[in-house]
Amino acid sequence: MTDETTANASDTEGYTPDDDLVEGHDYDGIKEYDNPVPPWLSLIFAGTIIWSGFYVVAINLGYISRYEESLDDGLAELQQLQSQAKEKTPEVTQQMLAKAADSQEAIDAAESAFMGNCANCHGKQGQGLVGPNLTDKYWIHGGSLKDIYKTLQNGVTEKGMPAWGATFDQEQIVNLTAYVRSLQGTDPSGAKKAEGEKFVPGNGSGSSDG
Ligand code: HEC
Image 1 (cartoon, rainbow, N blue to C red):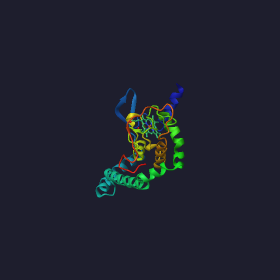
Image 2 (image 1 turned 90 degrees about the vertical axis):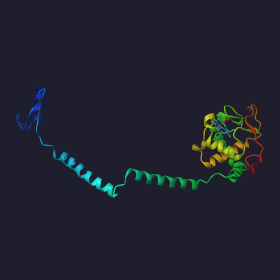
Image 3 (image 1 turned 45 degrees about the vertical axis):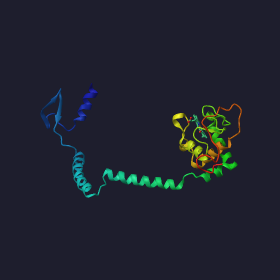
Image 4 (image 1 turned 45 degrees about the horizontal axis):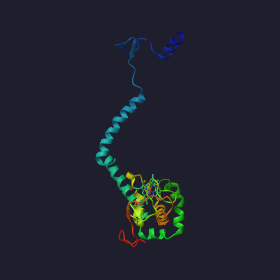
């Protein structure tokens, strides 16, 4: 109790009880003093008023960019970056795919990616598990190199085939396409029954796809 009294005494140091008391403001014994607002607070308050004046003038004269303008600038920058990125990765061509399919190096480069990401659904030999058999001539989504590339890139997410475009870069998907093609005719044991339509090389998609 004595402690509280001393604390109170030091809080109100410099005031005599009746100093600047606001008459009639007595709430359950809590009284209000008519103290001036601290100068720093007045300064901030005055500052906001002055700033609002500047702001109204500046935004109308175009010294401050409006939200819509900043947004337009940002969008233009984004579009530029996107078109730059597109230029850096040109669209995959038949030649790129055919070259990889003929290259043992490209096929080998994709092997560990296939084992780590595809084998759990398509089997280690591509014989098919949850996903279809990749070793036969029958394809649900087309058997040309371009078709396979597209299936890998975009996936068939509603049927459980993930889109790999987000995981692998273009070269890796080209190599995986070559790997899938290399499984053709390997005829592993326990292969899943064929699904889809027969793909005859050179007869589909209007390309000289061998
Ligand atoms: C989570 C399981 C799963 C994983 C992982 C997976 N796939 Fe698939 N994949 C499927 C399913 C399911 C389909 C069949 C989609 C359909 O029925 O349309 C499919 C279809 C395909 C097809 C098209 C087959 C056809 O007949 O047209 C190819 C090619 C393929 N996957 C390759 C791959 C490769 C390469 C990988 C690894 C990078 C991979 N998949 C990873 C489940 C998977």
